[in-house]
Image (cartoon, rainbow, N blue to C red; front, side):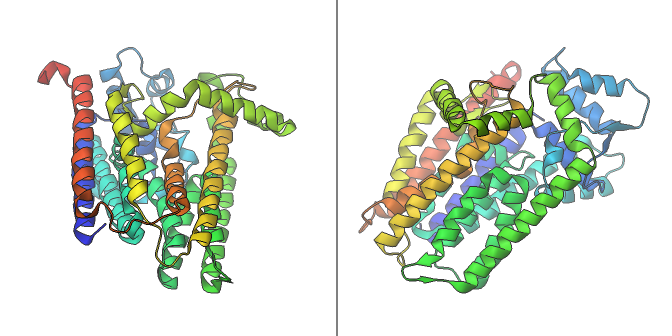
Length: 451
């Protein structure tokens, strides 16, 4: 990818994403109400979320009622019926996440709070969304710059309708994908020790402290320290610093979550509104009794929901009820394979070393998939459930590891490459795919006024 390609791709990501910012109605994306409430709490100074202003909760309830009359959450309405000015924490899911992930959103929400009186909730929501896509675009520019000859697969994952739409709302998903990609890329590219240290520590810290199930991805930078017959000592120290900082942060935040009763509150809500049969301790005990239990659950999940997960990975928007057309999924998969085919491993890596790194990336991807599956199975599924209700958006970081694996294992390098017209294929295809996705959203949410 040339320098011009990199700028064009970044501008396309920003432009397509900005359309999602204003096209997706408020809270018509997975978990955005909870993420917005979390960021709003941090803007108020609550790094451990305890409660919300009545104005915010009323806005959430009104928006839900506007699109789903009669289906608003009874728990929210019960709280609003009480006379207090502050409403107890309703963002039980996002309260589990480290506040670091929401600092960008919280900063812009704080600015809106200071500049507008009374507080304009809708204005703050869209301001937070704009920050989301700006941060995502900036990080993608860095990713495309450091990935060099293997940039196209990472760009293509980033512009899936699911990934880009999630990066355009208030959600940690875009940041999680970018930090996972950075962890993978700085470990295999020939970068300076200082650049490696800064980005590895920052990315690993955000990734692991927010989503611990993605920790196996750190296997790639660990093995990548071995280059032929030597291990880079300075980079090893940086990696150890990243692992230690991430682990300490994760453990300390877990302690705070339990200390302030957030975990207990979350489990109470899950037992009441999801299923009374959920028991994380018993669930993990059953899995540990026999690996066959886990194998059975994974097999059932992939056999029953494999096609659905792939469609969700590419694009099932709204609250997982607005799927993109089937041809979009096929086109995305074909061009992803093409992107991996035309990409090359870094010049400083010999093929035997590259093969070892590629195998490591596959192992890391498999272990990450299992960790994500176990985490969801423990917390969200009834005891002894035959499958796991996963969501395709969970697998964007795993896809990043798999594209690294495909490029590293490939036994050849492109001599001349499909050369200078590559950007035309991907940019036109991305525009066509998102045009189809915009049509789906327009038809779903604005049919009465536009069509």
